[in-house]
Amino acid sequence: MVQLANDFPVELLGPQHPPCLSLYQPTHRRHPDNQQDPIRFRNLVKALEESLKQKYPNGAAQELLAPFWALAGEGGFWNHALDGLAVLRAGDLLKVYRLQRPVPERAVVADSFHTKPLMRIFQSADRYQILGLNRREIRLYEGNRDALDEIEPAPGVPRTIVEALGDQLTESHQSVVSRGAGDGGGVVRHGHGGKKDEQEGDTERFFRAVDRAVTERHSRPGGLPLMLAALPEYHAPFRAVSRNPLLMGEGLGVNPWAVDAGQLRLQAWEKVEPIYLRRLADLIEDFHKAKAKHMGTDDLSDAARAAVEGRVGVLLVEADRVVPGLLDGTDGRIELGRLGHPGMDDLLDDLAEMVMRRKGEVVIVPASRMPGTTGLAATYRF
Image: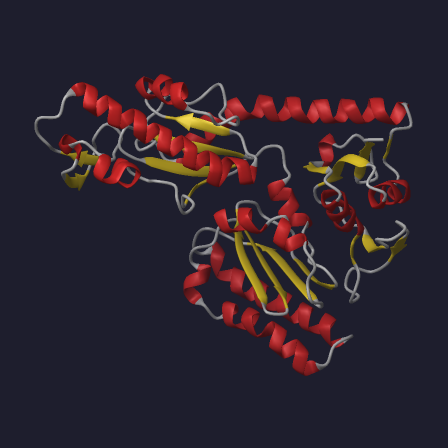
């Protein structure tokens, strides 16, 4: 997840050397369901091959598809899947992402990457992160309404008090002898002669270092709300030193080392869901008000022209809707077509990318909560 956060949207929406190959498929976390995943993957690679052959020489197609075929044969890769998979290829660029959401099967060859399924992940309003904390170490999780997974902290984020403080750690904390139950299932340390105020000082400096690193390496790049999960005695000390604007006011007063991810997700979603629903309601109300004043539209042609002109401030896009065609990036004209044809992509995808490039906001919305039936709702900024 960290890698995808670093790549999207800047790198993946940037100029690429066509053809750009985009493959998406749902995957399975457990045996025996995951046995079908490499078979379905090979079928999608064949679909990419057929699409490529319509426009590009066979030699070029084989070279571009070689990493896909290699991935299909990696048994270990398929044994560690999440809920979805994305593989993007253009020129020398190859990106492979395990996703927390199932995605529709899709094999697209176009002049740019098909990124709408990734937007569903990064632009959905239900995403959040959890910081699991005790006075000795941390854990990081990323989730949505359906899933929660522990993620690797980004480089520079200290996982333990030793990593954070190094030789500045007081002597009483220096001896690390085991990992066990502790106060949070964390590192058990034994020392001698340490004073209580020195230990509290270490804890405060550890919390500051964690807060600073998580803010810089996770919260700011991803823009996700951050929920603190820790025993009650750690909440006030951490909040006293935190400068993270995305830290949620309510946290979880649990030991994250004592509950599994499924339990943690259920507790977290109880607090995140009202925020999620409130945000969607506000966005939809803003759209209706704007449309009544001719400052918004759910017409695809009107929205396309406004997006090219940089006038779309907020674009709501229906999560699973696909409108095959092309968007002219110079004047906003649209051309409907067939998704399997080389050069054709999803117009909603292209429109969303255009809005993001013009510094507008894109939010992927479930069909049941869209304010109309066209698959989009655009609110103008002028």
